[in-house]
Length: 251
Image 1 (cartoon, one colour):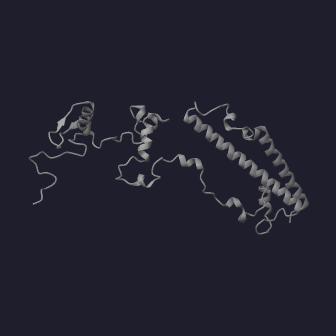
Image 2 (cartoon, one colour):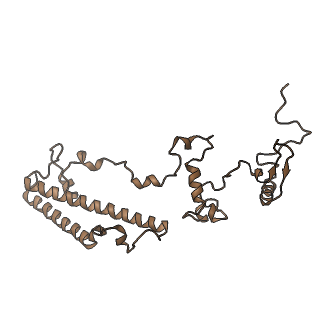
């Protein structure tokens, strides 16, 4: 049972903390939440001409302000709840089990109305911000995207088609920097419209015969890559015709 002197001391501590919190909120205009739109707190009229990175930084700061505001509101609510319990004569007892709350806990946390075993703060929330949904890759959310052998134009292809026109990333943001800003996106090196590199400079007749090599920049790039690796093809060396082939003819 709390003594009258100790109860008055805790009441005074709660009132001082309440005035301090209200002062913080009044000083920063409730984290600028009194304004009509969050752009007003930054002096911006629109997001149209802002860089995505600047918008991301602004959003992060706004989310932080929102978290602090919610924290302040929760503290004020707990203080009012504790002061109301003092008026009703129930202060110092747990709301759930009705047992006496240890004095040490009340001195450390005078706005609590729960014992340590029943405090709501013991429950850890696993809810994630809704914004994280758009931070994930835009593909892999549909059954078609998860089929390795599917050649249809899926969500990943849609992203790549748009990313070719530029993203907010720079070559320095990638583990293997690109030579062109138009290639600064995921799997930019993936072949589009063809499978093997040699399809850019090799042609045949309508029967698949009379193979002809048409020298061009793609052919030179292909040959240079093979020379650097010291191999005959992108999938390794092939034996000459006079050597045994990899696949034996069925007898």
